[in-house]
Length: 293
Ligand SMILES: Nc1ncnc2c1ncn2[C@@H]1O[C@H](COP(=O)(O)OP(=O)(O)OP(=O)(O)O)[C@@H](O)[C@H]1O
Ligand SMILES: [Mg+2]
Image (cartoon, rainbow, N blue to C red; front, side, top):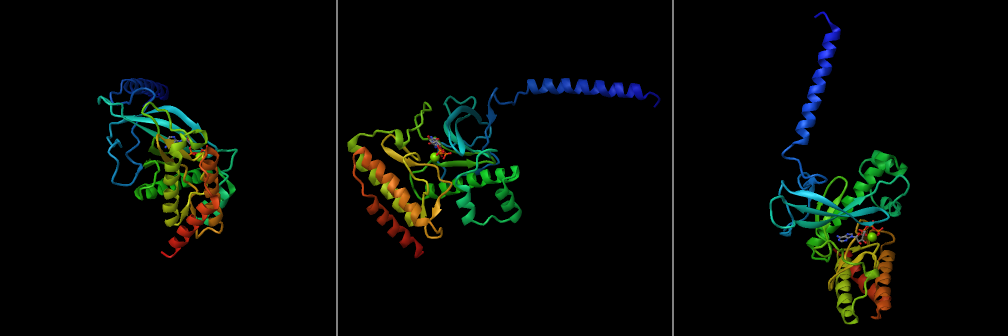
């Protein structure tokens, strides 16, 4: 009871011992993932639609390695991630991890239009997003990730050529990696020079995907050769957060028209003349038909 001094001395040495033990146990933790890696983030994330492709790894003991940035975009970074099961003699599976930025400097160029058209439930959240507080910026990136994940889930279930959305976590969306098993991403159309005799098939693929989308009442809203990947001989359409409700959005048909023109121009430049007005006409008719439902 007497010595405050000795008590505090004991206390300090207890902490020292504890810290040493803690460090020791952390360093030798038998269950820690290998250096520089993380445990699978599957548990606790929102999962993609079923039936789930059989390549998705759901084991809780799986590990994820970040293999680096595939591309730094204006609003998000896309990383290449490998999920694999230690002790299993396959290389696991590659996924693309899209991480939306809640940047201090940049505003999302698509925010204004998006926030205009949709109600966010709580006005406090709406205000935080409008005034771009840190909290508001975090909400905006979560909103974009959630919007893209939800759209991919619907479109994938409809059979459209989009990457399978594996899972949505708090700060990133994991999706099917489109590319080679060695980690080389499929080129964007803007850099691709497909053989002339493939162009007709590619256009039919694109056209039927766009028509199906319009029948669902949607336009991509940012469709261009930058957001379409050439995966071998097929097209895969990416980058969906701003998907547009053609009938509900006051500029819905303008977006549809711009999407049609961007793609028609690419095919025309590559040697397959495509009439943008005709394509837009077909899409508009499909979207107008969708409004009856
Ligand atoms: N699933 C995927 N598989 C392979 N590569 C992908 C995938 N998703 C995205 N990428 C690559 O990452 C780039 C950026 O992705 P995305 O277009 O979705 O994001 P973004 O922020 O809009 O980028 P940007 O501003 O360049 O349009 C794509 O152009 C593509 O090269
Ligand atoms: Mg893009």
